Length: 303
Image (tube, rainbow, N blue to C red; front, side, top):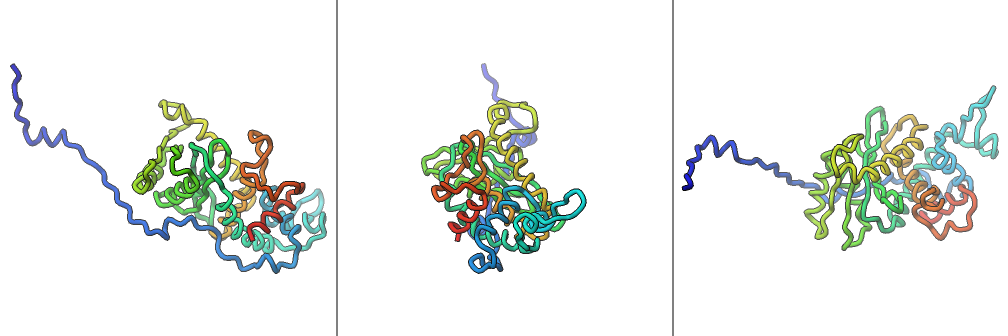
């Protein structure tokens, strides 16, 4: 015979659950994937030829030299020499290099978005750290798992939900409507919160997978660890290209180099796993042998 138990108020309260409710009120303009600012230099009216501009971007971006090393400093055994001046007899200041880079980045940002193309079903994301005006900033990067293209890049001064939403929103922008998307990140709570926000407006829901720590202490981390390692390798490549800058004096300067790095990575940098081809193949670059020639062609396409 079963006995009915009368629950006291204290016992009922101890069994109750509490829920956390989140409601976001972001305006549409807050969610835009912004690029570098309008440049003060008009690339169509500079005093140097397009090949020289391509040569500057080759040294500054592709070969990861600082602006001063590109224009001024290449320390030899006994004297300071200028790379562009002593090798190519081109007279430039390092500020001119920065101005050209900022102007090129403004147009390359649109090119990066336009020619990104479709993405794979699994993408990995993480933040890299840079210094802007002496303060820590975060670059949100996402990479597609098979074609290895950078699908999103966003600079912010926090690791909060909003910059994570902006990066993930851009990462999935060119996906197919029927595509099942899995985003792999670390344990930063901004990512699941952002996916919750994005899924509220999507019919095909995003799936989030977390890889925690350096050891596989759970099945999910073990299964998706290779994708986390993929974004970590991208972060190391990114840091190699921005390290010569030793920090940035402005947000726009940082965004300019980030944008140009993505252009280099997606359209110019050969990958061994892609049969020594870049992630995004542009037919317009076929037959161009030199890196500076490819940069010049990319700038003409961007313009």
